[in-house]
Image 1 (tube, one colour):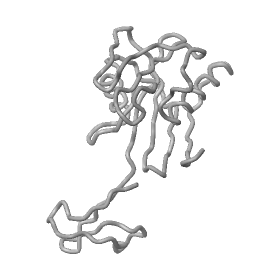
Image 2: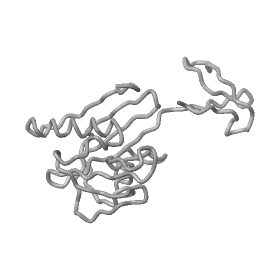
Image 3: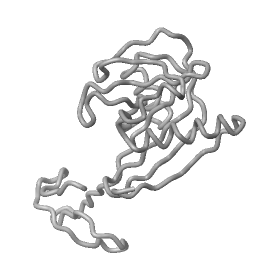
Length: 183
């Protein structure tokens, strides 16, 4: 899933794949200036914004999963903390102001080189609106959630664990999971 690096971003020379001295992994290395080009997983971060017993879901206006429902989330930027990225993504996709809570789930997707981190969050008010990447927003009670129209497995699992914990007395557990391609 990682893209190939063909040329060095430092000096422009052709890059080769080899195990650098002192390393154990095959890397993209510039033989001219010896720069190692690391390709690491992407972080997708977001929130599960709650208002009372309802969760705020966004209907996607972009691919992948156009028209499906999801939690507000997206790729973390450089020079940004994980929490700040979650707050920013919630503001961008739902124009919603939140109080960030604890991490709910951290789900590794090694087959696509991503890690999804979703925080618990409390909506500070009901003044929210669809951002550019969102067709519509809606608050859902658990029984109203369109489970067959949820965009991503990570979102489905996060919601399922949250509601199971709530039914079991409201002691919310952090869950670190790993998903394979066909689970």
